[in-house]
Image (cartoon, rainbow, N blue to C red; front, top):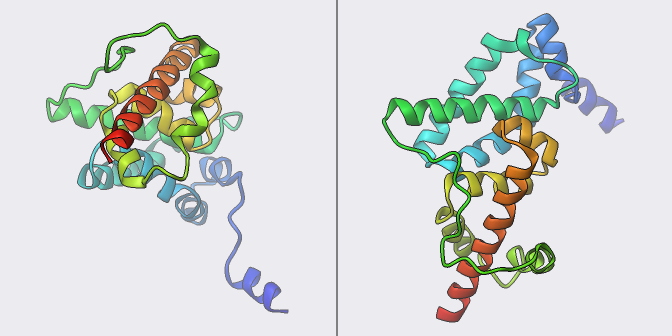
Length: 197
């Protein structure tokens, strides 16, 4: 009984609310989109900027959703489309503030060493291991380049490589390279941090 009252009072957001909003413009679907994705969107933006800018850009992104809803194509995942809008809005804001963001950088932070792909992925569990504090991980993440930080954040957000391609408008190989370097740099930074403690 309680469950039926709850579902009557609070309409459960549907996963296709972006398509419904694109078609109808009904604000109920926009509210569902905000309920589904606003926290994830803000988290992504704050890892790429700061709390103030992330808040401003997330608000601008929702305005762009209203303005550009007719451009949404149902075969695209709503979250990926939303993140693409947010990313473009953030980069536009950085340009407006004359803040340079390197979008084609794939270099290591430290001296490059020749590790195979299997060496890099075999230790990925170390990145998210429980003995590393959130603060240490966040500090290491902030030392990565914009594109490496973005790639790893989007992967942590649960996006597929295809989704990350759409969001960043980069090739699959470029994304794989950024992820590989990001993971290697994070392991190096977190390893250095563990040695200091």
